[in-house]
Image (tube, rainbow, N blue to C red; front, top):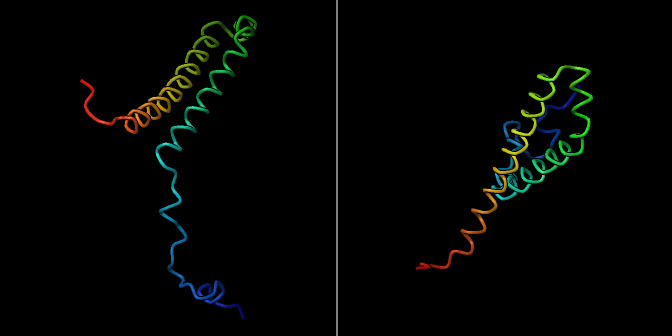
Length: 100
């Protein structure tokens, strides 16, 4: 016969949640991840920019340049979202009073 789940884990009850509210990423961590990820997407786009002409000839001009525009829009938005959060955090920490 098998043990019930509550006794198999030791003293913990069966309805105990494993989620730790302190383990969630902070806003600064999310901003750093978004900035790095967005920058990586932009670098990838610039790395293949020379191939766009060949892809346009193979797959169609509208499709290739529309996909490139969409890629750059998403990458730029992710990058700037993270960068804006980091800049706001830096300004909040450096704000020592009225600077008139």
